[in-house]
Length: 255
Image (tube, rainbow, N blue to C red; front, side):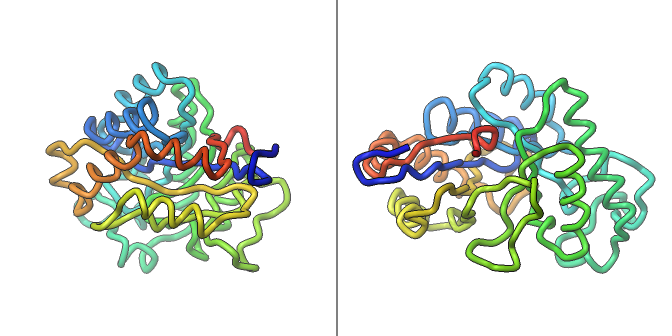
């Protein structure tokens, strides 16, 4: 597909943490309905999953994938002892890889995928909370799930020769996680787009939300999400995407 400036880059703007809280859910839906978010990923072990699926049903153009969780909340099963601390919660990110055994990880991740499927919907793709699927212990399990369920997978790093996915597993040509932090602006988004100019396809990770009590209590990254929401729904964003001949897509539309 060609535009004024040549090949059109296919862009997926994914909002992580769907299901975390109603404020997060509404922020993601608003960023899609009134902004440029095309895709989201669901945390199947979070309290507002039912609410998220209900909203997704009302917005069928939003791609919904699965955000595999190993470091937030509790597992869906009670038979994965290596994954939890004494209170039954997942280990925190600094500790998780010291404790886990891979059988428990595969069991819990499979359970999370099957829980998603039980809603009568197939995930558009797989990614993970805190990028745990990039870890050498976890990656083989997630690749196996991607193959088993025929799902695309979030790229782990960009422009890295060791980052080749096995044949048959789709992903974007590039991935960028830098739209995150205290000083984001419309220019931040533009810089990401310019950095990856020429990439056939790109995924940008985002975290828009309206702030509510569960988010404030559970996440150190809260107020910044409101800023992300403001940027992602700014009408100037669409104009600037059009100027760059960028086509917004979901993972289902990857070639």
